[in-house]
Image (cartoon, rainbow, N blue to C red):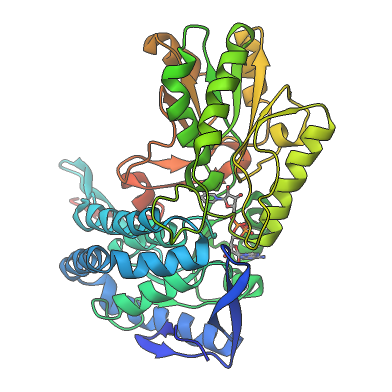
Amino acid sequence: MSDYTMTIGGRAVAAPRTFGVINPATGEVAEQAPDCSREQLDEAMAAARDALPGWRSDEDARRKALHAAADLMFARSEEIGRVLTLEQGKPLQDATMEVVGAGVWLKYFADLEMPREVIQDDDTARVEVVRRPIGVVAAITPWNYPLLLGVWKLAPALLAGNTMVLKPSPYTPLSSLRLGEALREVLPPGVLNVVSGGDDLGAWMTGHEIPRKISFTGSVATGKRVAASAAPDLKRVTLELGGNDPAILLDDVDPEAIAGKLFGAAFQNNGQVCSAIKRVYVPEALYGDVVDALAAKAASAKVGDGMTEGVQYGPVNNRPQFERVGELVADALAGGARAAAGGRPIDGPGYFFEPTILADVADGARIVDEEQFGPALPVVAYRDLDEAVARANGTHFGLSGSVWSADADRASEVAGRLECGTAWVNTHLALAPHQPFGGFKWSGVGVENGPWGLYGFTELQVIHRSKL
Ligand code: NAD
C-alpha cells in the first residue's frame, strides 16, 4: 500500500504493485510508491488525449488554472518540501524553496504572452504566424530537482494548450505525486496525469503512440535513448542533459572574495545540479590561494540529515550516485591528486560524503573529464588563458560555464568564447524563468524557460488569407 496516488484522468489511482522509496539520509525504505502498469499508462495517455480539445480551446481558463496552481505551491510549500527532503535528501529549507520556485515559474508562464505575428498585410494577402499546441506531452524528470524540473515542463506545455503525462525519477517520485494530487483541485481531468514507476515506464512513454512531444531532463546516455525512441514516430523532442561546467578564473581575481560564490555554485544541492561548477581553472600564480580558500569553505560546511535545522548539505541522493562519486574521488587520489578538503564517505548510515576539494589534478583525470554530479570539485592549474579556454571547450558537454575577473568586460570577452548554452560572468547558476536554458553539443537539444521554452511546446502555423 502507498499513501501516494497517481493522477490519471483527474482521479486518484493506486497501482497493482508498489516500489520502495529510500530516504538517502538513512539508506532505508521510507515510503512506497505506485508502480504504474502498462494498462494504466495507456489510460493516462488516453486521458491526456481526450482532455486536449477542451483545454486547447480556452486560453483564459488555462491562465487562471496556472495562477491557481502557483498559489497552491506557495500554500503547500512546506508540506511538499518535507516530502522532497525525505526522498531527495536536500535540507528542508532548500526543499521548501524548490516548491516556492515551482510557484514562481507557474506564475511567470501564467502571464507570458503568446505571440501572434502578422508578417504581411497588403493588397494581396494577410499572413499571420500563430503558435499551436503540439498535443500530448510525455515529460520525464531526474532526481535532483524533481518538483521544479517537472514544473519547468508543465507550466509552458499547459499554457500552450498541450496536455501531459509526467513521470518522475524512481528515486524521487513522491513530491511529483503530491503535485499531481494538489493540482487535481485546479486542472480539468486529464490535463495533467502523473504516473510513477521504474526506468521501463519512461521507455514505454517515449515509445507510446499517443504523445507527440517528449520533454526529457536527465543524463546524456538516457537522452540518446530517448531521441532514438522518438525518431521512428517523428515525435518532437526537447532534451536537457548533463553538464561538466568549467569556471575559469582570470589572473586579477581575489581568491578570498570569490571563494564563497564559487563554492556555493559548485556544491549547491550537494553538487547534484546539471549546471553546477564541476571543474575550476586557475592561473598558476593564484592556484594555492584558491585551493586553500575553497578548502576552508568545504571544511566549514555543515553536512547532515536535511530534516535537521542548520544543515547546509544533505546526503547524495542514491547509492549508485554515492558510489560513483566515491569512485571518481578515489581514482583522482590514486592518480596523484591531493584532497585539500574531504575525500571520503562519511561513516554511518545514509549516503553522506565529505565536501571534497581536489588539488594537483588535471585534464585527463576522470573527475575532470566526466560529470561527477556530487560533492567533489577538482581545481586545475593553467598557464595560458587560450589553453584554458580550449580545455574548457574540449568536451562533448556544453551546458554552461563562467569566467571570473575584476574586469567584467575582459571576462565577458572570454565568456563569449565558451561553447555552452549559458556563459556567466562573476556568477554561476543564476537561473530565472525568463532566461532560456539549454545546452550545446551533448548537453541538450532545445531550451526551457522564457518565450523560447514556451515555443518548444508549440508548432508554428501560418494562416494565409488571400485578398485577390
Ligand atoms: P537518468 O537519465 O538516469 O534518468 C532521468 C529520467 O529518465 C528518470 O525519470 C528515469 O527513470 C528515466 N529513464 C531512464 N531510462 C529511460 C529510458 N530508456 N527511456 C525513458 N526514460 C528513461 O538521469 P538522473 O540520474 O535521474 O539525473 C541526473 C542527470 O540529469 C545528470 O546527468 C544531470 O546533469 C542531468 N540533469 C540535467 C538538467 C538540465 O536541465 N540540463 C537538469 C537536471 C539534471
